[in-house]
Image (cartoon, rainbow, N blue to C red; front, side):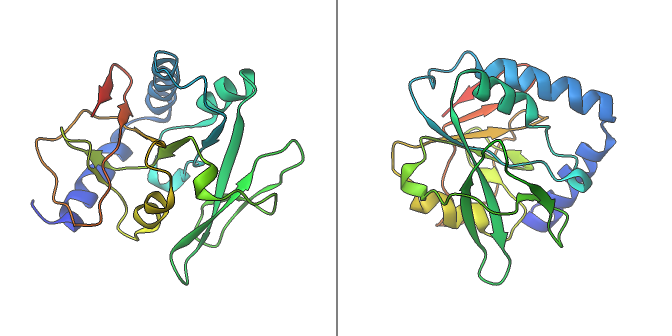
Length: 187
C-alpha cells in the first residue's frame, strides 16, 4: 500500500468505520485542542465545511469557538473546472448550499483573498511526522496554500495519529499543526 490512491482508499475506509457518535466526540476534542494554540491574536480563519460522505471531522465545534472569540470565518467555494477555491466571508445571512459534488459551500458573499488569511484549517485523510498531508488528490488546497502568506498557520484535523512517511510531490506544503482528539502535533 504505497500509492497515494491506495492510501486514500485505506484511510477513508478507516474513517468510515468510526460511528457518527465517535466522529462527533473526537471532533469536539479537536476543537478543545485548538484552545491550547497561540492563535488568538489572529483574525481571519479559513474553515472547511465537512463532506458527510467522506466522514470528515465536524468543524462546527471549532467555528463556535472562533465565533465566541469574534474571529472572522472564511469559507470556500470550489471550482472543479480549474481546481481553484473562491474564499467568502461567513456572515449571519450566509446561505450554505450543497454543491453538485456534495460539498457544503456558501452560495455567495464578500470575497477574501488568500493573502488576508491568518489561519487555514486543512482537510486531510492522513499526515506524517513531518507535517505532510494526504489529501483527496484534486490539488485544491495545494494550489490555495501556495497563495497564502508564509506566516499563515496551516492546521490539519485528523481522527488518527501520524504515519511514518507519506508519499509527496514537490508542490506539497507541510502543515504547521495537526489536531487530533488526544494531541496537538507541531511541525
